Amino acid sequence: MEVVILADADEVGRVVAAAVEALIARRPHAVLGLATGSSPIPVYDELVRRHRCGAVSFARATAFCLDEYVGLPTGHPESYRTVIERVFTGRVDLPAESVHAPDGGAADLVGAAHSYDEAIATAGGVDLQLLGIGSDGHIGFNEPGSSLASRTRLKTLTARTREDNARFFGSVDEVPRHVLTQGVGTILEARHLVLVALGSGKADAVAAAVEGPVTAMCPASALQLHPHATVVVDETAATRLRLAPYYRETYASKPEWQGL
Ligand code: GLP
Image (cartoon, rainbow, N blue to C red; front, top):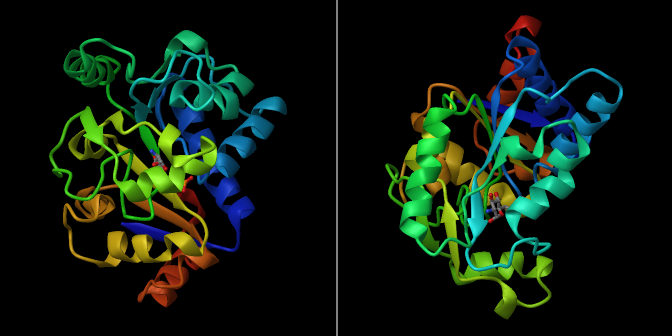
């Protein structure tokens, strides 16, 4: 695992966007795994900026969202399909029909979850998966206790995650209890995982994920099992990392050609 500690959210946005741009340059039909939440926003803003100045086109790319709430009406402003279109895909030339999200409105949620994993496999798998991290160490909506081998499935949100996400809904009572999320096992199949964490509220979760034991109690710790996982954090999210001096030294002396 590579840990990259950067000054602030803007620099995190630039470094991760450069990795996405390099991937698309190599592989214009790349499959991107997209995360919602506030952490990847600087990355999306930077990609939109680069797209507008002609540096990158997503016209041939495909995207799969990590997760979706169950039971929100189509077009609900906080449905992750709507959110990802608002914050990223609708601002670049990624065709709407190439953007996929689990169907949280399906009558058959088990079937919808299964079809989602199949669709990812049919697309050839995810090349680069962006991830945020919940304050309890969740990735996607894989709450603590999630099997590290799990597939896309129905999950129940913890009270803490519903409280964390209440800011988007007005009140905690409006945050759905259930979600469909890619499983930890599904996420681990992506060829490159890039986890972004910003702010002091994520410092404990980042330390547990990177330097703690691999455990279902911190689903993000599963990144330790992946051959190409990159954790990109700002200074405030890095404060609990014991090996921070080593991560800084490694990144500072990294050959330019290596990228992320
Ligand atoms: C939600 C999303 C996660 C995201 C997490 C953290 O729970 N399902 O994918 O990582 O929020 O969000 P934020 O980046 O806003 O802190």
